[in-house]
Length: 411
Picture 1 (cartoon, rainbow, N blue to C red):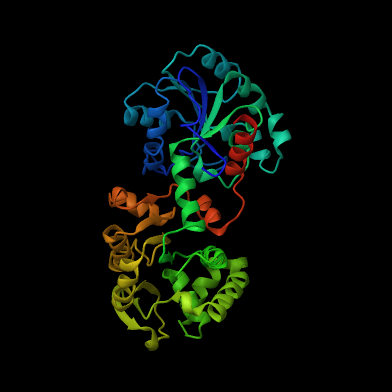
Picture 2 (cartoon, rainbow, N blue to C red):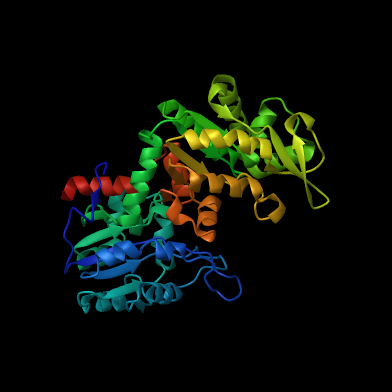
């Protein structure tokens, strides 16, 4: 798997395994209850494979100063119920309490250490190199206690910190089942997708969508790029269609300092690659809380554009049904409003109906797949929002680089 060790490469039965996960989860602001435990459920396959090892889980929840910054005791409890095996929470990251608990472990036992971001080094050393990370207290105290390091922290794979990248020189660093699946699917989406390949890019972060489009086009792997949602509205605007002052201002304010960059990327795409681009031909606007259909040639209107229209979906359907691979990242609409969920839900339905390989990017689209219970009907549903986007953009992924570095050293 592209120079990375997997659980199939190293036997870990009876070994002491440090297991870095990303179980950062949305919590209810008042009760602290889990609003979505998808990231906890996603690490079960790896924990099952490590059932006869001594496993110590490390992870984070939010960051200091935020209301959902908590210890991981609740995560350990929830994971214990999902897994059906005892998980002991240790209120320490790398001090004496943690080290003593680790040294007393038996095979098959699982510990969960505290939120690693409660240790100042985890955030303070985010720009540090490998040698400085190795010298951190977290790495220097924990590394001698273990035989191997396994990571499923894909959602943080675009970040750098002692617990994410610091063990690469001291321990064999291995991709867990979740990390292995993410790397495999997203590498396919970027490097060698079955053709025809359709990328559907939506949501509000237009600059990210344009970077993904640019990367796929430069690699020569994509056949159609469908822009929907706010991104689609911006492409229409760049094409010279007046989408209305309110919709323009929403795009400007959402992108803020990134607006000029996004605009120039969109201009370049429209000028040089219009043959690959699919844009909406009709939309739905909100008039007095009602959904009203408008053809693009009927714009501008003073109302907010909240969805793509029926004709656009009918044009998109045969393209998706003929595809061999589909990447979908970002909703097509303001789908939290029931009257405007139609476009996004229909794209999801098409993803579940097609015979194509379907890769759903992180964030809102991934959460929608989970909430509608159709995870088994898409090929891959990414757990990483920003990490997924950075990989699709072809940007650096420090955690994957650390895995590759370690594989060279320990293979």
